[in-house]
Length: 102
Image (tube, rainbow, N blue to C red; front, side, top):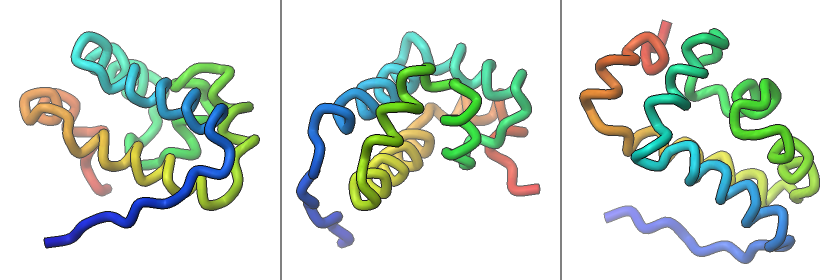
């Protein structure tokens, strides 16, 4: 079974801020609103850079992400992609267009 390697976080403060923003967006109380905002913006859910640049994870998240090194940014992108795959199937079906590969 695949086990992700644990990588050292070089700058914990901005990393924690970005991680908290992602976790908040994917929390059970906010996920539907987050998906709706993605749909209205016309942003594909798997395009992390566009989601970030449009401010859909919060305006301060853009600056915090920019402070991170390449390794930390990679960990954040991976965490974001893992979070979107854990969305409940009924919400994924409701927002099928966001998840579709076309």
